[in-house]
Figure 1 (cartoon, rainbow, N blue to C red):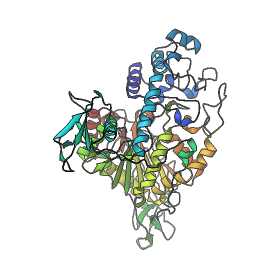
Figure 2 (cartoon, rainbow, N blue to C red):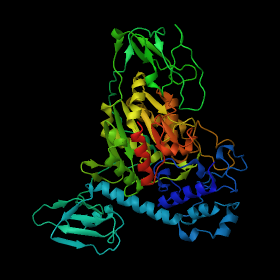
Figure 3 (spheres, helix red, strand yellow):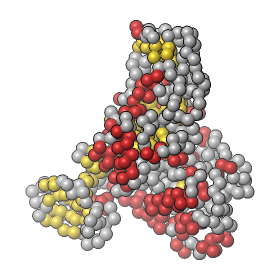
Figure 4 (tube, rainbow, N blue to C red):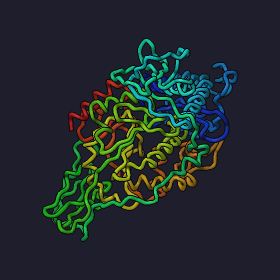
Length: 579
């Protein structure tokens, strides 16, 4: 449990990041969104933010252990959409039977400021759909367009580069635009004319974003009008061939050698005394620990001595076919013009993180040239979601299904063995991951393999799918939605908070992307699920290393979260230097 101070820090951080709404109507779930980080928010928010109110007490109790009488109602209509619907604090407490505690003011802030969230949601969605429809070109960071004819738009505060681009597009004679991101002229928008038909670009302007106007003709485009559209993913007709390593004869257990102890993990393991003919067993976290006196050491994918996929055997050199594969295509979704973009800049400058992958792609709801040749790809989502559901997390499933859709359409991952989805505030070292992936090549066939990174369940900061498991998730998305979207329970619902087989109503209103992906893959596909206990150390997964925030342990692949740029960079330096 977090301390009161750390909880309040988390809430202050959350409220600072929120800028849009929870509900615009009582209709489709897609219209009920809060702006969020597009990632899982701490389970600690169970005490405060929810789709409905709970009786608040001074001590925090995990939602999963609340009795039926203590559980929050499931009605999602408590947030006002108009300012005149907002009740004064005392009336609100009485109407919703709120037991006032030390975090009640946070909940009331969410309630009372909700009408402003609604307006921002509508505004951002409207701009995004306009940009998509008019096929707006990229916004270039750090460049100015030199022109002898430039005029400042009368609006003193143009809130984003996208709005500046729209002003230019709708203004006759505007050939280019520049928006000021920082400095004394912050949020100024300039329109520019070109008499020669071209512009001179100058770089080194960190405070400027420039670009061309959008098109003049409206294009047709995909947009998720209802939840079912999200699950209808554009799957390829062919599944890529995987030449995974295999042995043409049964693996021998006579010549294996292994080290089973894991001194970097605190929990004990059954010790295996290697003798002739004994079981060959070694944790997947130690790929370098397996060897054979003769032949190749290959994992079978079977469990042994309590270890996921710990079994291995020996194959004669002339009987090995295929090869180990660790080619990684890495993808990242970020919110533009936020700290997340700053964290990407740090990784780019240090050639670390996602930029160490074999291939990578950055996604956002804006097309931005962050660095020369590095351009984000647009997804059709305003990157807004609500806080609530079964685990009181960011209900970002709709966002990430839209993200999946674009990744599949781009198809860059089809030439790689692995798809790595990583959050911007996750510090990680891809070079630590490669040996692990080598040893898991046995799982690339069929519906593939994906890695569990937390004993509490699959967590979102870093998600590792083989290419075939990522495709299996897409192929089965509609089947999973049909099976897991449940009947909505409104109130007095015994056991609804503990159910995991189905959601309460739509899963987009009940789960985040990570739990949905885990449930879908484990229950509706033949994908192999392997726990790798050194994959992630984070606040919300009972970290087993006491000083994990120092990022000094050389066995751990990823650490999360680090949202402040200086903290992120310090951790990244430690991760890069200790490998």
